[in-house]
Image 1 (tube, rainbow, N blue to C red):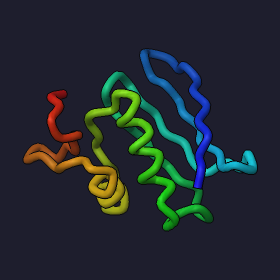
Image 2: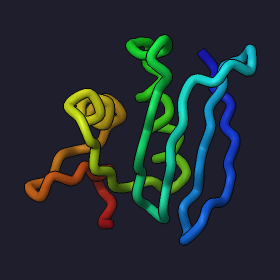
Image 3: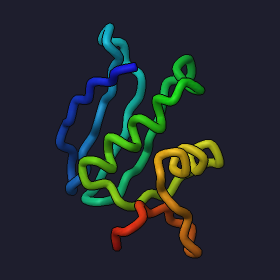
Image 4: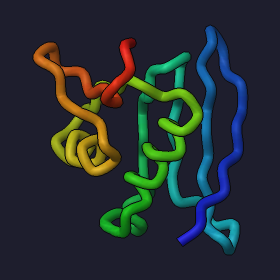
Length: 98
């Protein structure tokens, strides 16, 4: 499964990302601010197929190092993408300090 990303600058250092499949159908969205990954959202009909994990890995490859998931499903996605939970509730990519 291939995803194609579109990056749009937002206010105050926030970057908005949109992800589409090979048929240009929207799969999900995310935001980043520096090394922080935030608001990863996969469309309801596309959930359960690994798109969220693929989006998080894409963002890690582009400098994402820390995340605060808002749900248990989000936490599971961060774990699948290789991030580790810290004592303060953050998920971090191992080997990096943020």
